[in-house]
Amino acid sequence: MERREFLRVSLGAVIGLPVVASVLSSCETDVNKVRGQVVEVDISPYPMLNNVGGMAFVQVDNYSFILRRASQTTIVAFSAVCPHQGCLIGDQMGELHHHKIRCMCHGAEFNPQTGAVTQGPATTGLTQYQTEFDPQSKTVKIYV
Ligand code: FES
Image (cartoon, rainbow, N blue to C red; front, side, top):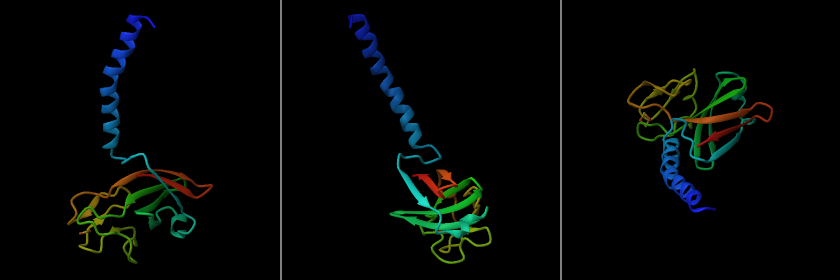
C-alpha cells in the first residue's frame, strides 16, 4: 500500500469511528428498545393468544411481558413492569380482561394496542419491544 492510500484508509477509519459510534448509540435509545438480545416465546401454552385481541402475561427467565395478538401474523410485546412504581402487571387474574391493561397496585391503565397511559397515576406508557412472530411455529421473538 502506498503512503497516500495508507493515509486515506487510516483517516477514513478515524473519522468514520465517531460516526459509527454515534449511529450505534442512537440505536440503543430507539423506541423499539433493541438492545441486541432476543427472547423467544412459544405461545402454544397461551390459548388466549390464538384470537386477535387476546392478551397474556408471560415470564421468561428474568423478563416479564404482556403479549397481545394484534393480527393473525403479529404479536405485540410490552414490558409487564408498570412505569409508575414498578409493580408487575398481569400476574393476577383479571388485570388483562375486558381489553384493558390495568396495574392492580394503584390503578393505572394502559391502551392494549399502544401501551399508552389511559388512566394515571402512571405518566408514561409501557415499554414496547420489537417483535417477530412466526405463525407456523407459534414462536415470537422479542428484542429486549
Ligand atoms: S405501580 Fe402501577 S399504578 Fe402504581
